[in-house]
Every structure is written in structure tokens, then in C-alpha cells.
Amino acid sequence: MAFGSRDTDSGITASVKIVIAGGFGVGKTTMVSSVSEIPPLRTEEVLSELSTSVDDLSGVETKSTTTVALDFGRITINPELVLYLFGTPGQDRFWFLWDELSRGALGAVILADTRRLDGSFAAVDYFERKGVPFMVAVNCFDGAPSYTVDEVRDALDLDAGIPVNLCDARNRASAKEVLVTLMTHLIATAENARVTAPH
Ligand SMILES: Nc1nc2c(ncn2[C@@H]2O[C@H](COP(=O)(O)OP(=O)(O)OP(=O)(O)O)[C@@H](O)[C@H]2O)c(=O)[nH]1
Ligand SMILES: [Mg+2]
Image (cartoon, rainbow, N blue to C red; front, side, top):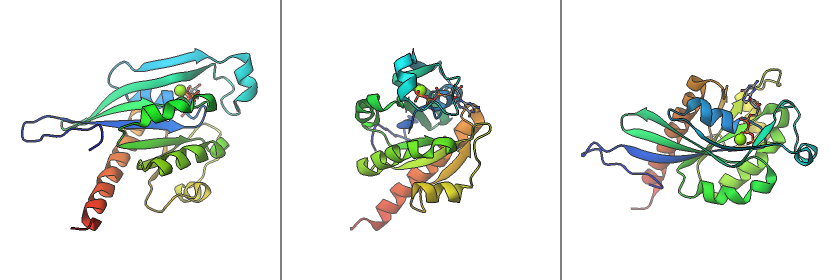
């Protein structure tokens, strides 16, 4: 298990690394902060004037800061499972950090904003290429076009088995539900691989 440990006999909890990824301003820092049971680590800097002319701020015009390294948080799903959450930066110029942040990750959540769905393609490609199982969570911003999960799946050209959830990144219960969906998907994917592996 990547970045994970499990020893149920001795009652040791499994620790799992999960990446919260996605395009610029989709709500990654918001999600890690809302769901974390420890004070989240945030590495945000004020958006410069230069940056606002490059980054697409449509829909998040009031956004004044951006992640420049990572977000970090932790959530205990149950007594046997603790997730360590690593949020990526969203700006293109920080893509080089994604390799470091996703090293050893068991899975990823790709957050998406339906007003700028094209910003999600790169993240989908990235985790497909890396072979890291992922799901898509649509952060339902107020006033954003609402699409069904099937419409989002089609738009992003996702395989049928990849979960797509609608969520509110500001809401702890909603963010936790996303993470539980991801864990269920990871367990099913691992089980599938075990059953189909040659003996
Ligand atoms: N209305 C609404 N606003 C949200 C939601 N999630 C995040 N926001 C706001 O949208 C803005 C972007 O959120 P961030 O969490 O900074 O986004 P990010 O993906 O971490 O951004 P980068 O690190 O710059 O890529 C912030 O101003 C949030 O307060 C949401 O679900 N609904
Ligand atoms: Mg951020």
C-alpha cells in the first residue's frame, strides 16, 4: 500500500495519503481546510496584478490569494483509517510541485468548477498517466451551471467506473462524503486488481 500502513491485529491505524488536485481556484484549499480535524497548513500568497492578468478569475473574482506550495490537513474516517490530505497549487506555473505532492499517494480527488471545466482536463490526464486512481468532485459554486454527474462524466470523457460527486467544498460533511466515496472506490479498484491478477 502506497504511503499507508495497516496492522489491525495490533490496533494500529492505517494512514493514507490523498491528493486534492484541480485547476486554479476550484476550491482545493477550501476543501482541505473545511474537512481537516487539525488546523490546516496553508501556503497562500496574495495574487499579484501580473497573475490576475494570466489566471482565469471568472467566477472567483473576489479571490485574492493563491496556493504557492501545498495545503495539508488530516481527517480520521474511522478508528482504523486516517487520511492525510495534500492540496496542490492550481496555477500552471506550480505544476512541477504535483510530482512531489502525489508521490506515494493512494488516490486523488480532482475538484472541478462547471464554469471552467476545461481547467480539469490537465488534472485528469495527469492522474491517468501516473496510474493514480482518482475521482472527480464538482464544487457547486453559487450561480454555476448545474450539470448532472453523467453530463460531467461525458464532458471530461471519464470511464464509467470513475466516481463523480457534486459537493460544497465549504461544507465539512459534504467534503467528508467525497473522501468516503474515494476510499470506497480505491478499495473496489484494489479488490478488482487482486481478483483479476494472474495467480
Ligand atoms: N460560493 C462558493 N465559493 C467557494 C466555494 N469553494 C471555494 N469558494 C471560494 O472560491 C475561492 C477559491 O477557493 P480556494 O479554496 O482558494 O481555491 P483553490 O483551488 O485552492 O485555489 P488555488 O490554490 O489558487 O488554485 C475562495 O474565495 C473561496 O472562498 C464554494 O463551494 N462556493
Ligand atoms: Mg489553494
